[in-house]
Structures are given as C-alpha cells and as structure tokens.
Length: 204
Image 1: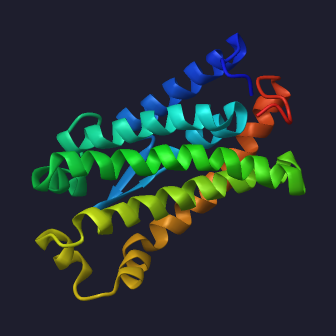
Image 2: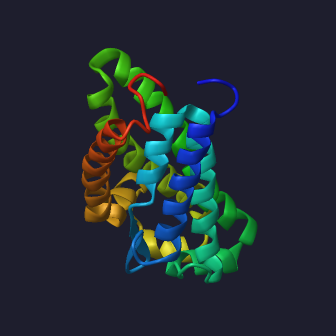
C-alpha cells in the first residue's frame, strides 16, 4: 500500500471503525460468559488488515484495544475480569487490553500477505480470519499471565495449574468458537467487499 490512504481506503477505514465501535458498545460484539467474553470484534480488524495492510490493521487493532479497556471502567459494557484487573493496576490493565489487539491487527496483515503469495487471496482471507482470532486469544492470555500471574486473583484462577494447561482450559470452547466464526465470516465478508469493488485482490 501507499504511505497515505487513498480516499476509498479512508472510506473503508471509517466504515470498519464505525462497525467496530457499534460491536464494542452494544451486545453485538461481545457475549460475556463468566470472567471471559466471547468477542467477534477481531473480524473488522482482520478485514482492515486484509484490505489496508499493516497500517490499517494497526489502527483498527488500536481502536479494538481502547474499547476493550473502556469496558474495565464500565464504558460500552462491563468486563468482570477487566474491572478486577483495573482495580489491581490500571496501567497494566490498559497494556493487557490494548497491546494484544494492536499486535493482532498488524500481524494479521502479514499473515494475509504471506498466505496470499503461497495459496491465493481467497485462502488468505479465511486464514487471516482464523489467525486474527487465534492471535487475539494468544496475546490476550499471554499478557494476562505475564502481567498479572503473580496476583492473588490470578493465582486463584490458575488453581495450581501450569500456564499452558490454565490457558487451554480457561479459554476452552470460547476460543474455538471465536476462531471458527472469525474464519468463516472474514472470508465471506471480504469476498462480498470484493464484489462491491471496495477491495481489490492483491491491493493490500
């Protein structure tokens, strides 16, 4: 992509940002189950990463991260875990909510580029949807353990389990559901946007 977004790119960025905000501030994007929330908000980020490259993925990932952090203080919904982490350390809570989504957006763009060269843009679109969800979960849980693993709250959740077992059992079906839905919807939506000529194959 060019260093600066084209008018069409800015339009798409605005559209995806609006969709992401609606999903973040309404029940559309989150389904809270216990301390975790099943989120579909990585889908607009993945689409932006595919269509607009690493810069677009970074911007949309940052928006996702900020809205996720705002839930820690009750804006746009409430995350039970986020509230507790914010009470423990507000700054680390921001890092834990923001950085994984930023990195996910950037890396998803590179996943698309790499897979596209090897298998074509259609497969790359579906793969990007999968990896957006996978990386979101991986980075989110890794930062959770890294930044809060020694706290009383996390020690109670881990209940003596090692880190890998804890992460696998904690995210469980949530992560599987997110990855499946993100894979399918991202691929289908990108195909629809291509037909609407909002995205051109090979443009990102």
